Length: 334
Ligand code: SAM
Ligand code: SF4
Image 1 (cartoon, protein in one colour):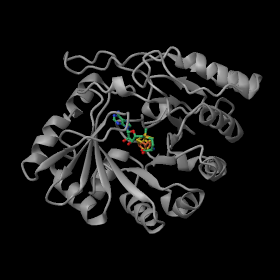
Image 2 (cartoon, helix red, strand yellow):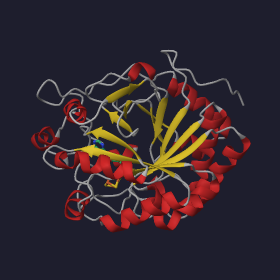
Image 3 (cartoon, helix red, strand yellow):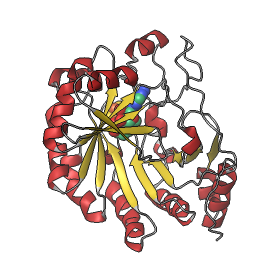
């Protein structure tokens, strides 16, 4: 099989794959899902074997970093079989990082197994440290279970990064509480601007939008912020708080243009390859996986990457949301 690196039309090398392993979740976060979601029939999902073939093909084509997401990845049945399969690429050195984004609800069960297959870091989504608010925003989630999962991850030796969606009027008053808690626990912390995904009413979504420029200004009122130059090829920017040494990230897909350094693509749980989170253009890899061999899968990936667009079209600045996407984050994976 041809294994030249994946280079897109704008000379960006694709080395980072996010793969969604399920559209299901045990939470129903208000900004992510409707309360009564219609989930996909099982036959539409890639099997664990198909996920293995697909991700292994990407790795042969130069993907070095794999992030597993969902829906909630840890509610997929037998998901550790897939993590173990990907662990072999860590052992061979083909993959430099295997990681996941999780709501934390199942971490108490799986943290030890994840560490054993070579996972070193985990992103846990947590928008509030208040149990009632947590129940309100996740609808079905319970804070103590997630906090226990985070403790288990730390005890297993995993580095934890907390991802917090900045929601106006919801967690604005918890900014310093979250920063202090992460500092005390030794977790990195990244704030995410809410994105126009899913089917939420436009008025609600604009009402929830808390620009990270404002959040950053509030942080600067209490700490000296030192800009860090490191880039991940994604939409995150980092600062260090001089007083505590903590690293704080900001993911601002809407107010910053990060596309020029984009090194990543996404695969949904149904095997659709999205070349850009903010565009509808996609390639169906499931039919190739089911009909052909790995060489054909590699050719299909390469063909799709040759169409990776230059950037996305999200824009809140025009009062209405242009470039809004109808699909949910739980479908493409965050
Ligand atoms: N269930 C896992 C979790 O919650 O971490 C993984 C999937 S979730 C879709 C990935 C990330 O997307 C989470 O950090 C979540 O907060 C974020 N997310 C979901 N909907 C979003 C939205 N509309 N805007 C910004 N971030 C969103
Ligand atoms: Fe589930 Fe994650 Fe979406 Fe919340 S953000 S509903 S935990 S997939």
